[in-house]
Structure formats: structure tokens, C-alpha cells
Length: 473
Image (cartoon, rainbow, N blue to C red; front, side):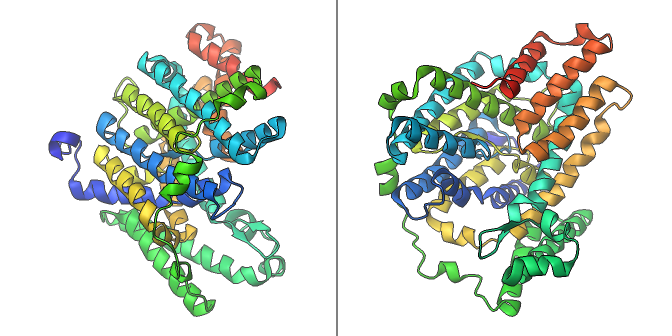
């Protein structure tokens, strides 16, 4: 382990790395079920859903393991949120345009993802993506970590723990519970689901404050302990106050991986013949769009999480950034060949970093958990979102405080950063928030006599984002 991951050099131990890896997995394990839901329109149990489920686990495991061995970084990979929804929209539109089945259009969309991955692999090997990282202005680079923290806070308080009533209406903790005019108003709206909301809020806040206290006492694995303790509280409250069995989903659950369904539907199932019917201009446009989203989501996550881990050197560079970006591209190719949308580095990796993860052993542990998830998915599914929300809230706060590194006397640093700070959680897009910050930087630098400080690539990236935001194709 020492020879592979250089644990002593990075000031960590095997125990710390393994606990950090498990923590990372728990905070992003939701992707195992959510990704096939989003890519198949919640067609749970269908042959395609089963195929995407296995592909999600395999692609996440392989990509994260590559991050461990080739980059020795504690970052985990999985099919990216946001871009998977875009993938599903593209697949649906392809079906509408060409008249083929959704399965056939899904296999066509996999071709676009494969092409994107190959393009990124080439750009990474010739260091173009690395140069783009270097071209991002200092203020924006320093602001990515607190902006990611805001995004994690938004996920933790909002989208990670939605509750649905009998009519399918969704209620988030921050928007619905803390935003309600009065408890009676929310209770009348939610009906029988209101007690579930109460238990969710109590679980979330209990776990959060427990993590804060344990970290203050310097207890290792505080985030993981907080998640597990709050999960136990949720299970107990569900049984005592709701009269429900929190482990009911395990009864009759199948632990036999549906490899056959993946082989039949998604594994190397590329429908290149349908690309011509889609139109080559549309295909090129889609590849570019996927590239932009994936590139800046990955760059933002790498910079923000590495900053949190103290991995940024005195020049503001991330060690082994080329290897990390190359692995990210390989992950996308693996995802396409197995049958899922773009695989990217996950911001939830920050939870493992907060738990002390500093090397690839953290990533390897997460990879093993993803691989095991193919067989133990029903057990993973009983971890309530409220418990993982507690971890996301804590990690989000710990990342926001890095805002202290911003020079608030320099307008070109703090204005783009503040815009990115609010844009990232609201747009739910790391890439779009960075793009908006880049455009803001260029405009401010131009109007404050700092034109010469604008990097040539920053000009190009700003124009690319302007086109993305305003030009309809």
C-alpha cells in the first residue's frame, strides 16, 4: 500500500483512507439507483433499466479505480448528474426525429458519448485540457471551492432528500419545510407525508450536528459515523412513529446481478447507423455541448476538491492534473461501452477528503464499494437520503469557508467569484457557473484597464460560453 499510494508522504494511513473511501461512496451511492431511473424515465425493472444499473456500477468502479492507480488522487467517478438528464433528453429527441424505439435511440446517444470521450482523451494526452485549467483566472480558481460548497449545501438541504406525496408532488427540506408559512400550512399540503418530512429534518440536523461535534473532538471517521448514526435514527423513527419497516425493501429483493440484461441492451451496443438520420450537424453540436458540460464540471470539481485537500501547490497547480483529466476521459469511454452517460469526477469526493482521504487508496476503496454494489444494491438502498444529506451539508460548509483566500480588494477576483458562488447552486451546473464567471472576468478586466492580463484561452472560453448561452442551433 505504501509503495502504491505513498501514504506516509501524504500524511495518511490505511485506516483513514478506507474510512474516507466508504464515506465518499455513501454520499454518492444515490447515483446507483438514480442514474438508471433518469436514463430510462423510471422504467424500474425493465431490461434497459437493469442494463444501465450494472453499467453505472461498473463504469463508476473502473473509472474510480483508474483514478486510484494512475493519478493516486482521492477522487471518485460516476455518471455525472445533470449531464445524465441531458443524455436522456437527447435520446428521447433522437427517437422522435428518427422514429426508432427508445432503446435504439439510447444506443445512438451512447455513440455521441463515446465520441466525446475519445475527443477528451486526445485533448488530455496532448495537454490541451491542462492548458485550459491554467488559463482560468486566479480569482475564479480560488472561488470554485466555496462555490462547490454552496452547491453541496443546496444538494444537502434540497434535492438530495425530496419527499413525494400521493400525487407525485415533491417537497424539499429547505424550500418546503423551512420555507413554509407555518407548520399547519405544510401539513395540510403534504397530508400523510408530513410526518416523513419531520423525521427527515430531524435526521438531517441530528447527523449534521453530530458530525460537527465529532470533528471538533478530532475523532477520525466523523463524517461516516454521523451518516451511520443518523441512518439508525431514521430507521428507528420510521419503525416507532410511522409503523413502517425500514428494511421492507430487502424482503424478496434479488441479489443476482442482471448481467444478461446489460449484454442484451447496452454493452458495446453502439447504433452508429442511426447517426446519419439524426443529422451530422446535430451530432457535432451535441458532441461539443457534451464536451463543454463535461470539461468544466470535471475541471471545477478537481480544482475545488484539490483545494479543499490542500493539494494545490504554490503556483496554484494540481499535481498529476494531466493524469486525472486523462482518467476522466477514460471513464467516459468505459461508461459509453458499458451503457451509461458521461462519467465524470464527483464533487461528493469532498466528503472523503474531509474525512482525511489524500491518496488513491481512498478512491480504490470507493471503487470496490461500487463494484460490490452490483451484488448488494438492496442494502445500499436502505441508507436514507436524509443521512447522507447531513454529510453533504457539513462538507459544503467546510468548503465555503475557503472563501477567505479571495482578495476582496481586487474587483477582478471577487466579482466573478460572487457570481459563480450563487450561479452554481441555482443553475445546478458547475460548468455553466464557471462560464458565467469567465465572461464576467473578461468584461470587468476590459473595463478596468486590465486587458493585458486576460489569457488568450480565457478569451476563447468566454466566447464559447457566450455562444452556448445565447446561440440556438
